[in-house]
Figure: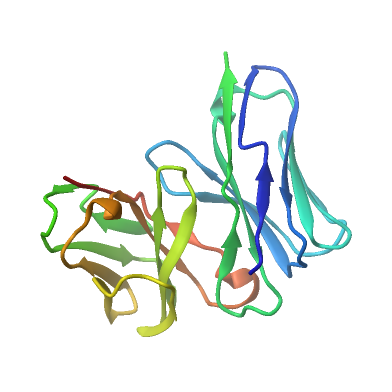
Length: 112
Length: 115
């Protein structure tokens, strides 16, 4: 069974600080997605990375896919209270045509 | 316009009852899913339908029965509800099953509480 482990599970920091959260696996993924889930809502896609070593930027968010396509990171610069939420990574397994493999998420709280 | 909608948003019921949750998507997608998110926020896939055909049926009690009357709808019926069924149930859809087109769009969730 392929697993995606996310760390840390929980992070609470002050507004303006930088942070990085991680999504790791011992297995290779064909693609990896990051979603953000706000309280009372469903997850919303932030980005998809497909190439080993790929870096994508979304305003203050920087996403990186590991060279070996086994891990990914999300870095937030100058965090704002609006970044608060549950960040989920989901991987597309090369040998699984049908479904995404989901991590358990990092709960992020940005205090004003 | 809501892309993926679910009803009801909240559902409180007694153990042993039968209940249904409805899901509709107006994105023109071929694939729809049901997920269960437990109290620890872990998303677990339950079912996936592609063009009204069941594709994924994870280890879920047979008290849970999905039904897809057409590509835009995927309903979930639960028989003989148990305390452990309490969770948030999310419906999602994607354009296709494969590759990056499997990007999933989620509904707002149905919060089920079994007393």
